[in-house]
Every structure is written in structure tokens, then in C-alpha cells.
Image (cartoon, rainbow, N blue to C red; front, side, top):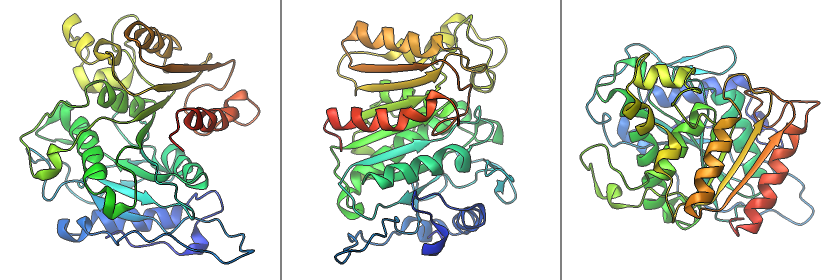
Length: 339
């Protein structure tokens, strides 16, 4: 199990400092699979009258595979966490669980971006987990396999992890203290592509079933994508995501197959989209294309395009309107009766 952080290491918004994050990540990555798979039974934290400490419980770890991931392979050596908290050399895909002080039963799977070459866990995922915990949502941060790191599954590796993560959350909902009918996803940048594809292709299983968890639904009940990569088709194909997943010279069929909008159909979870108009990485047409696909398929969608903010603003770039998106998302989740 992931080494728990101390209560003092988690601020009121639930953001771990880098030292705690590195220690927790290293502990899980270095542990055996059976140890990673065990989690403590969920027990709500009851607080006495007048107690104003709303900090979440220390983060814990949850493996998503009972053994090596499908196909095997992967990086050698220890997992690496950069000075900014970006993760590479992921040998054990997993979930980091941040439980609210006052859980409401809703759960959110979070995937940070990084162009499928790294995972910006500390910059994007952990602040988002802290925000969600502050409104009662149990957050599950996904550390997923990276295709360039020699996995036999290749480009399918992170998608296998995302689907398995949702099935694990749903299959262990009672143990985790979450509602299996209120499992949402939140993706940033390439993490938005990952979870957008998972939303649109939720019941696809890209590996031989491992255990009973693979009989669970991989469908999220709600999807939030922030400055996501949506399409890998021209003229918006100049991204690391496209190069990593399908190479420099994909066929039109490949480009379409790996684009989220291609797979949007009726019956999907509702979408919340947020992006800045001056995004230099993910052209704002990405969210416009997804919005149009949702509207055409009769899928509920809400899109917010902010004048400035660039790319990679996480919970919002100071001095720009992007700082408003978490409050907008909370209001939207309440309208969707998710929280």
C-alpha cells in the first residue's frame, strides 16, 4: 500500500507537497502487487461540533491489475518523478485515492496530461483531487502506462489502464465507500484524450479479461475535459499525442480511429469542456469539434471557452478567467445531480 502522508502534509485544499507526493509514489511503485492491491476499508471521518478541519484523509494507493499489466514489458529501473512532479518510467499503473473529510458518495477518476510521454500528476491531477475532495468527491488519480516505455500493448496501454481503473472503482465501490452510479472522469490535455476515448468507447475491452472486475461497466457517469486533445486528424494533428499514438505519417483511417469525436454516440455520459482561446497546444477547435459531435448525437454538453489562459493551466491561470472553471464545473455537477 502507498505509504500514507501525514495530516500536516495535506493543505486545506488537499494538495500534497512534493516531498510527500514523491515518497508516496515511490512507496507504491516499489511495492509488490498484492500489497498494492490492498486498501483500508472506507470509514467516514466524523468530526465533533465546531471542528473546522476539512482536510481530506491521507492519500492511499490502489493497484488496478492483480499482476503485471496485459502483455507485460515496460520500463526498467525505478519510477522517476521530476522536480515539477511529472511522472515517467511507470512500471505499476495504479490509482492514488484522496478521500474527502465529508464524502458524498461521488467519485472522480483523474488523468493528467503530458503528451503520453509523462504524466503531470503534481501540476494537474493532485490539485484537482484536492478541489474535488473539498466538495465531497472521492478522487482517484490515475498513473497510467506510457506508450514509449516499451510496453507490449504499445499505444493501447494507457487505454487499458483507464478502462480497468473505472471497472476497479465500480467493482469495489462498496469497499471504497463510493456510489457505483456516480463515477465521473476528469482529464487534462492528453489525459483528456485518454478519458474522452474511454467515455466514447467505454465497453470496449482491449485485452483478455483478467478477473471478475472486467465484467463491470467501464462507462463513466459524467465526463469533464480541460484543454483536451480531441482530434488527431488534420489540420489539428501537430501534437505529441498524435506522434506517440499513431506516428508521424498515419493513414486517414488511423487518424480518425484515434480521435474522440469519431466515436461519440447517443447514450454517452454528459460532457463538460473548458479551454482557453489562446491555447498553443490543443487548438480550441478540439473542444468545438467535440461539442458539435455531442450535439449531433444528442449527448448533453457544456463548453466554456475563456479568452486567455494558454495550455496547462490546471485549476486556472492566475489573472485569467480560467480560474472560474472549477466553480462552473461544480455548478454543472450539481445540475447533473452528481454531487
